[in-house]
Image (cartoon, rainbow, N blue to C red):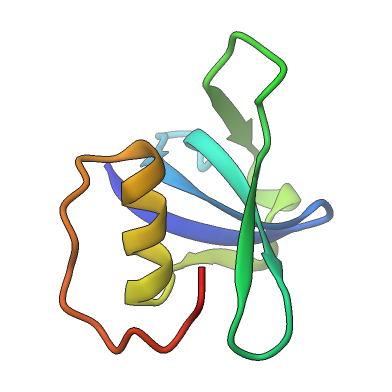
Length: 96
């Protein structure tokens, strides 16, 4: 699984992604990325009140038709919350 993001009607969804044969994608431990100015971002856990840790998106639920790779700083912040904690070298330009 890799950390990917998608524009959705709820906002920018970030999570560990598994692509399925039917074209849908599973986001494990999804968060909504909330931009706060030009250099700040916050994460809102999407499934914080539920037991499920995965959400499935159909292709038509993904705006612009594709997934994208978040910036290194965004991936690092996500890994601190849900991943291995491994930090990639990056620009450290975003305040998370």
